[in-house]
Image (tube, rainbow, N blue to C red; front, top):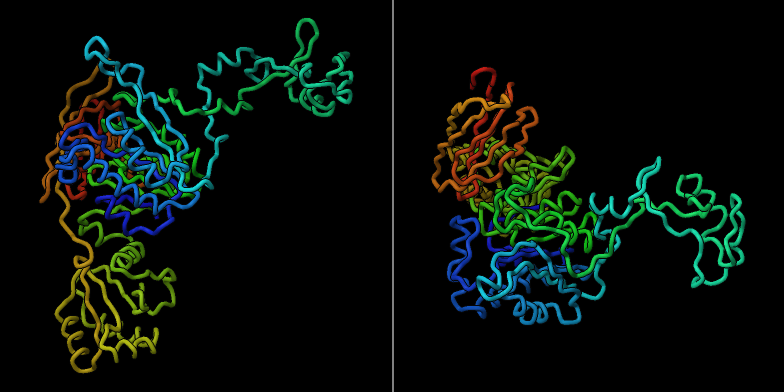
Length: 564
């Protein structure tokens, strides 16, 4: 399953299977001679960055090398890694990390990304040149790496299309190309034939007569004013320009760009699309261990790749989650979000089967995918001992009795072996257990020698209460276009700090999908203009544990605003 994971990527990657990843892209915090570099500003990020580079460049390189070593282990033999960095440490990263971990022979390219044409600084201000580029190092794990250059060619944009294909006919744009062989191509008597009164010289046509007729019938053969034939080359058949290691056709994002979410180092989707298409295929798995604003996982989702995103910042994980929800459709694959704490209500009222699978696997077991004729067994431990999950509170004695009977029928030999070894014959996972259940488990242990372990959900994953949220609306009047401007002011409370807010001004309760109009707002105050009509609004508050609250209400805008 696709995953967003809150935590230190080093610890997370150590628990992942070797050779399970096809492509790694990482954009780690740049070394900039500061004690730490904070982007999101939440507690998890600050804690992870504090004193990270107190020992200077050597400390930073040691910190990064340890993580790149795990990435090398995770990559398949056909896999590649793209490490994005700037001038502060790029030379150190190549020599002391990538060459050492991946080997000099597996260096593929030093890619220069020109992210801007208007860099800050100049020789007049700082007596040096403004920096307009970043470095992206590409290494493969072996020489047998996946490479799809044709699919990653640089596609022509609208302005470039008009320049390259200036002529028009009934089929659209074209430019005239040769249809007669040149002298340097050698004599081809078999390609010298008459067509519509024209016979080329001894070098002949560039194709057989059958293909020439087909070309003409398709409308792709033209004739000049002096009755010379030419081929009409179309944009549809243009594979694009070859890609080299200097990428100057993808600009960095600006605040008014449609895909911008307000994350200061957010990378454009086109950059990650090129990397993904170049070195992975549909169904491959892409890992971003510093997921940041979520661009890598969003691109992977759009390109039908599997993905894993890791970050120390709860804001990074939650923003990435919102961006994925925004682009997912009915047939999209599900994904999981692993946080430090989980909301009781979300777990308690989740889809039953998804919750059973999720909690069993987090307990270290293997979930039961059958769902039918399973004796009520929802999973097993690694030694086969049954697990039952009850998505409810105050489990009673009857559950213990039924489970005891079921596990004896499920695998009698395993039941007797566990019993004789004084090991648990089964496990029941629930939110809480009533007095009767606790007493019955004790009786079975004392009188029959049967041990059944009762495990609360909170023993497996930490649980917290989600925030509360209250939204006030203020009418700011109608503008010259007849649009009414509404100000939304949010008051949210949580056991943890509130980190940010997200807004969906076109929410559809029937679809039950939060599609954020504004993904990331730190203040809790937004203005939005509406035309007359009835609008459903959904606003979320997310705290520093990643837990969220959402208020949904309707606004009727016609003369004055009405809210329910």
